[in-house]
Amino acid sequence: MNKAVITKWNNQTFLLIYEDEVFVECHPLMNDKSLQIGDIYIGRVEKVVKNIQSAFIRLDKENVGYLPLNDRPALVLNRKLPKGLPSIAENDIILVQVEQEPQKMKQARVTGNICLSGNYVAMDLSKGMIGVSKRIKDKQRIDALKQLAKEEEQPEASYGIVFRTASEHADSSLILDEIRRFTRELDQIIHKAQYERNTGVIYKGKEEWITLLEEYGIPRIDEAKTDLPDVYKVLTDFIPNAVFYGEDYALYKLLGFETEFSRILNKKIWLKSGGFLVIEPTEAMVVIDVNSGKSIGKKNKDAHILKLNLEAAKEITRQLRLRNLSGIIMIDFINMSTEEDRQQIVKCLEQGLKRDKVPGYFVEITKLGVFELTRKKVRRPLHEVISNHHE
Image (tube, rainbow, N blue to C red; front, side, top):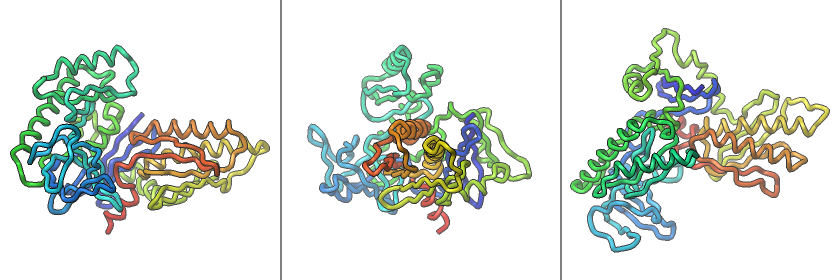
């Protein structure tokens, strides 16, 4: 059973996700609305830097984003670009959307392909494009969804549509409602952009917790609970059976969140077997070391090491989600003597990564026996968000 909880602790609001009573995701929510994923801006190109294949876009007085030059801007508002792949120049006015939060050493990443995403579909400015989630395997359902999009399409103002995993078993009327709503919103955004020449935000993304729940997959959530009245009023629009917690005993205490949170920020994580992990985020990568610790060896040493490493692999994929650690991840497991055992660890890591909404992949086992993973950078890691919040 998957459970979502929105609560406040230590003057910070959190979205927490539990899967089968296991704490798997922790999201401190932004208290200000200065810049967040999904916001759409009219931006001015401040500088084009070809040697790093990026353009820097002035979003407003406080914020600058970077746009990779291979990301074709969908709408340049001040001039008509030449045929073929458009090239942008300094002082061009373009429509962009925030797709990645600012990282420690980088500005926010923006894209020119504006996209609105919901429970069942994501729609963008790729006119006429129809896609279906790779997780939907039923060919008849895939064909039915594509036909649904074609029947709804208006040739003079069509948008690209990607059907999300939740659309596989959803009622067609709900999917069509979402398509029509996003069509109206995209029409309004483009109309406003064409007449507005000042830089700045023209469309605010949803509340951060709504976006996070949609990314996780609202149909996947079996139970939702909050002790915040303002959140509850909106939450019931998305999850009708959401529960308001109004007891005197604080919700975060009921969940044992204080203890769980302190563990998340520790670099050492103890395993049930007596072994432990050491997690060290660095500027270049995340390094994880698996240690036997207090684990007592059995007569069959190889079997015992495999069991400990499997426990560690499962916990590592959970910790990556909890701490939102991304980029290159290098893991030094306890040395295994057989290739078969190493492949069992690879399979365990891949299974854990599949449960994560943020794309992550096993890359290789290096010549030194280190396991290499990669996880897409979308939002800042938990330790950075918390340290910035308390500065």
